[in-house]
Length: 330
Length: 77
Image (tube, rainbow over all chains, first blue to last red):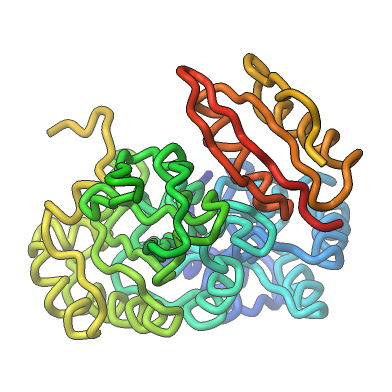
C-alpha cells in the first residue's frame, strides 16, 4: 500500500516545496489527517477517498471517475477497506483535488495514527442475514470519530450485521457485530423442529416436543427465529457484540469479545471510552491489542466496559462459543 | 386445494430447489397447499427460511429417514 505520509515527512515535503516553487500554495492543515499515500514514483501519491461502509452515491462515483481522469491515470483502485483510491496524483494537485471533493461535500480519508474510516457490510436493510443496521451506525461513527488522533497507532473499526462476520470484526481494533437473543413462546410452538435443523451450533434440541436451548452454545445468530414458521421462536433482544484488540498485518491478533447486546448509543460511548483508554494507557507506537496484552484484559474491562453498565463478557468460558480455529500459534 | 403427490426435490441443490417451489406456488392460488420432499442438510437449512421470507407458511414438517416432507401453504399475493 506504500508508505504513509507521516508528519515528519510532511515537514520535509513542505520544506522541499518551498524551495521548489514559491507559487505553489498547499493547505497543510487539510493534509494533516492524511488521505494521500506516497507512491514509489517520485512526486506521485495515491488519493484515498473517504467511503465509510463502502457506500457511495452515484454523484460521488462520477466525481471519483472525473478526478481519476483529471488528476490520475484514468483508473481507480478499490481497497480491501472499501475505499476508492485514485493513484498517480501529483502533490501539486492536492489542493485542487481537495477543493473538487469539497464542492460535493466529500473528502479524502485518514491515515497514520488516527481513527480510520469504518467499514461495514450491507446490513439488514436488504441482506436477509442482517440483524442490525450496520450502515446507519457506521456512518454515525465516521461522523463522530473520523480522523481523531489516537496518540499511538492506527485505529480500525468495522461492522458486521450478523455472526457470519463478513467484515471480520475479530481483526479490528474495535469491531461490532449484530446479534439476536432468541426466546420461545411455548404456546405458539408446534414442535416442527425446523429451529433445531437450522441451528449450526447444536444449541437446540427437541425435548418433549419443544426446542430447548443451550445458552453456552448459542452464538446469537438468529437463524432459529428466521426459520420458525409459526413465530414461536422470537427475538428477545437485538444488539451489538463488541470485540476489542484485533488487528491484521505481519502479526495478526484476534480480538476479545468484551460486551454484548449494546444499543447504538452504548456503542458510541464504548468507542469514545476505548479511544480515551487507549490514549492514556497505550505506549509508543502500539495497537490497542498490544496495550491490552501488556496490561491485561481485566484492566480494560473494569475501566471501560463494566463502568459503562453494559452486559460484560468477562470470562474465557463465556467467550468460548466464539472461538476460532486454525494456526493460532499457542 | 392441495397439489397431488409430493414434489420430489431430493438431489436438487440450493437455491434451485427453492426456485422450483417458488415457480410451482406462483401457479397456485393463495391458501393452496403443496407437499415437497427435501434432503436433510443445506436444503433443510435454507428452503424453509426462504419460503417464510416470501410470505408462505409451513404447516407440517415430517422427517422420513434422510429426507423431510414439508407441507406448504401458499401465502397471499
